[in-house]
Length: 287
Image (cartoon, rainbow, N blue to C red; front, side, top):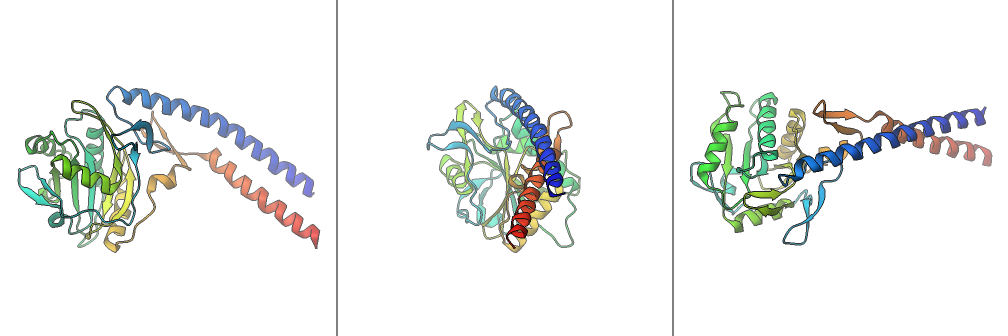
């Protein structure tokens, strides 16, 4: 009986691994296609690894070096879309979503901003809940006028009752931009005039400047935003959503959404069951 059970488990395991191998080959092909698609505009979409084989001037790979629990410098000064000077401390005084982009971007950054606006529409804040949003321009050549044009454009997606003052589109000098991007672990590289290789990520920050969570694009789910803001209220850093879901989900280009990786999870579950089963058999045999 034991041999039959073991044989059945082994068969299921090999079946899952075989299907998984096929799925992984398909994933590699899909990821390659994505890289080629975005390389023409020097953008890289976050997949299983949030890094690409490209180093910036600091010798670090383009990607995200998560700094959960660290405090960002709140004394930095930027200009908002109305060319008003803004010290981060005066705006990040409640849970804040920070999205690094550059406004000249015609591809990925526009998708990030549009998806964030759409998710904010679908996110139902609780009674008395308040938060801020920052679109942080990391190209020092950009001006408040360009930021204002971007804000007007993406605010067309938002519901009419969304307060204009809750979402700032900021620009700044090279020193301030370098300081804030380094603080959140956002590694990017300039590859040409108004062209950058950069990761796609939204950062949730508590009112005291503590980094709470990283949400990876291009899509931002309203549920994830709600969880990140709830953790920001508590001031307790959370594990990044994408780093948890990468094992279970893959991005489907046709449906433009994440799909559950059945055979990968099945394979992992069978491995765990096999280990537990043989441990039980060996333990019983030793008695």
